[in-house]
Amino acid sequence: MKILMLNPPMQWTVLENADEEGEAFIDTHEFGHFPPLGALYVLSYLEKHTSGHELFFTDCVAEHITHDGLKRVIEDIRPDIIGITSFTTSLMDIVISAQTARAIVPNAHICMGGHHPISFPYEAAQLPEFDSIIVGEGEYAFTELVNALVSSNDITEILGVYTKDSIEAMIDPSAKRDRRFLPGMTVPAAYVDEVDDVPFPNRNFIKHISYHSTVGVSDKLATIITTRGCPYLCTFCNVPYKKYRQRDIDSVLDEVQECLDMGYDEFHFYDDLFNITAQKVTEFCEAIERRGMKFVWDFRGRVNAVTRESLVIAKRTGLRQISFGVETGSDEGLQALRKGTKITQVENAFRWCRELGIRTVADYMLGLPFEKNAADVWKNFDFLVKLQPDFAQFSILSLYPNTQVYDQAVENGMIDGERWKEFCLTPFKNMTVDHWTEHMSVEELSDLHKALYKKFYFRPKFVLRSVLETRSIQEFKIKAFGVRKLLAQ
View (cartoon, rainbow, N blue to C red):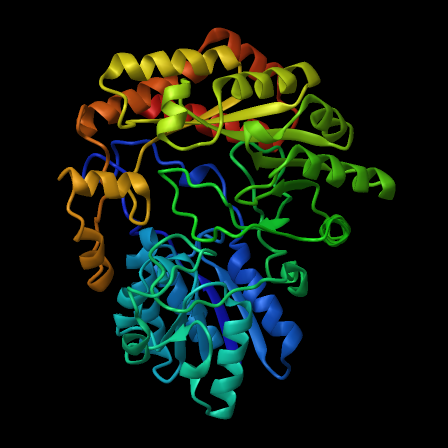
């Protein structure tokens, strides 16, 4: 069989914007692209455990393939089975992609996986464009689905695989909570306990694509996941997997070496939580040194799980940068967000990185429930500036289903709690995200968002340092693009 794994175009994503044209808030999609590792893992597992199939992988986002371009891709391949990875925010594009495929290959089996069926399993299964959905992690489930389709067996016997009809009997709101997932999981889901059983993503499927990061230095970027899941319960986060599972460090470094041999020269560890403890970072770096490996790397991490000692060895082994989720500038704010961090930990982490020459990215939010006016936002911004991060990424708090802050907004009557379910059952273009508007309007938040970016990045001292520290053509291009975007706002 011909099997296509697809990351659909991003033309009609849900807007985190103040106007219907999607131009009020700064759009960051063009600042970088990472490979959809989840879908690549699923295809690579299928490749290892089956034979006789022709496998294809298309990343429409990174390859700049429009919906019209996708028609040509499907016409050229004419797949028998299509797996489409998903986020709820991309649902309109996902549905259009499935409709395109159905028109060209009407007998193909089309399956939706990824984040959306986890968040909205019932609604996902109702979409007429799909023959099946996978709820949970897809490596085992998709391979079993393919085998069942080849053998004409019943696909509804597969854990995590559902159809419109089969899911009705499985939904049980009173079932005991599966603590491996966010609260609200109403059907049994597929899951990978032993993450080392899953083969490396086969990057031959994407070797023709140049991935890069907004804050990176190379167009030969490899993203790697060393763990799955995050046990923290931040009020704004809807990462579905809560059980934390770590890969064997030697296996991770084998994957790094494979990537080095393929020509990748920058590594971004894209775990939901790379540094669950400082000890994990230290052990990882000690393994790098034992092997005598040399590579440039960065990770997304938490300020409460680094020590100066762990950062010293990390810098020695090639760590270039850490992205920290700072979010806000007070202990009261961090407590309200259930971050599990304290301001002293934030200050220590940034000071240590600055002393050791490790670049930092501060992820920051505005429009939080406890920010009553613009003055509160600017007060938190002043704290951020004092941290002296090398980069800052500002986002307006978005109210997404399956988060505590969303539930709070529904309870106080600020937003319609049925709106997302309606969208998921009947997707439409120009869907927008809700924001916390108890104290400030979306227009005010939009203006603040732009102002924060300009205030941070156009400081003379920052501009001079940024120019002097630019080390590659790719880094210069990214910075120049960012300046043009900010000036256009």
